[in-house]
Image 1 (spheres, rainbow over the protein chains, first blue to last red):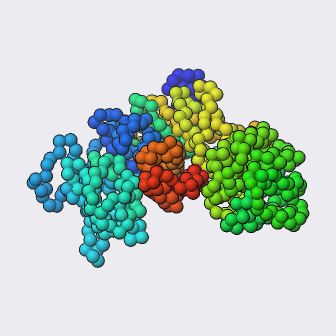
Image 2 (cartoon, each protein chain N blue to C red; image 1 turned 90 degrees about the horizontal axis):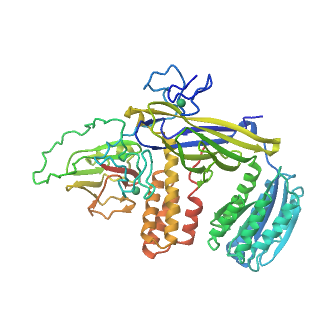
Image 3 (cartoon, rainbow over the protein chains, first blue to last red; image 1 turned 90 degrees about the vertical axis):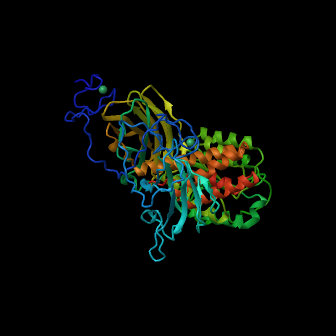
Length: 219
Length: 415
Ligand SMILES: [Zn+2]
Ligand SMILES: [Zn+2]
């Protein structure tokens, strides 16, 4: 018997080709998933579309990496969602609600960037509303607090150190973030932010709100 | 007989994308002893080599040490062999090599332990080796358990004694108490003698460390474990890490263009071993592939078993369906992140040593962020504190440095 993939001679009854590793299970239609649903719990993670350059470099420090690498060898940044080339283009989801208020006019239209962003927490994606100012915090009906990004479904509570109005993202042609004088503070790239100090935030930056760990992506 | 060791493999993704370039895959191999070995226990041939220098009088250290040794004696089987050397500038044999039958008499000898004098570890190691040598044998775990609280004279001689120990199959456990001892020396000694070094922050913790050492010795039923990865054509093994019980670079030996070997040494009962392999996958068409066959060979001296094997396949699917390639195995990714944090800490300590304050600070902060997200709050806090200290004063504290060095590798707990 010969391997259908590399044509090497393989013993009858072998389940994998010893040369190329291909499965020799015969009843497998090409391209179909060959195994039943994986036993291990799997969490869906959204890919970022491949960057225009097509290169694979760390979004934080620019060090090149091999596709599939989970963390940057140089700076430790998470690369799970960094520009890994995809087998085929994925249609960009449109999860953003239309902004309620009209855009302020004097706002400069950026040439390259776009006012879209998302936050990742524990493998889940939180869409950032398309607004020039986005408050991140914890909804509280009693006090009438309704932040643009409510972290309550992601574990925000007084116990996890998230304030009702905790931090604010502002679009200035690029994103900046400020801590809104929160009780437990905001950390960007491992540095604690001084209250109301606008600091540039880049794609892939680790962000800690109270004790919740997020990653910011401008995309 | 087979089935003493169970080997399981998982990958960070079950499906990887079809790409026209190489990509990295993470494979987690877990090895645990099975129920069949639940009652097995290795006989010991231990020598405790104990620092009794003058500084051991502070903070109740010598009293805590006496209590810890007595507790260790209580844990021994009557057939275990034990000896005790106390040392300052000179070694003194408190108990010559003997079976632990008369525990009360052994404990009375321990009460003679009083603190005074200098620190000369090498001659004490020599005296300890002499005792262990009296009862050497492949069917016993032969080991020096050294405890010191200070800088020793004659460091090169200590390393030489560690090498002598290794040549005779005697491993060296080197435990440093408090902050005033040379961690590089103790780690080097342990490494040369297939042992382990550890940091005991305060005297009350000696007892728990001694207990761990006795139990680890009695549980070391699997010896000479050797992992062989037979790889699919075109795969490069990039790195192989031990992740549990302690994170560390295992180093890969290519033995042919398809096979790579990693020495795992001994395996302790009830202490699952984890190995994380980073494999560089070649481009492939869609389909299901066995990317590697893992084979672990091992000896069980208790049963006279030599060269037993257990095997498992590492299977991956290449897919063009992006939705399938999106899923990751969170358990494997969690361990990958812990290894990444460990790498950052190791490099930060090196950079701090060589004076790159900014680089070290940044890496410590990133490691702290990752560990905080992983729920390793105590270690994250220590690292954060040392990053602040380093940034402000250019110096880390000795306690903080040792905590990072010795706790940084203990974050993965398999069960
Ligand atoms: Zn083949
Ligand atoms: Zn980087």
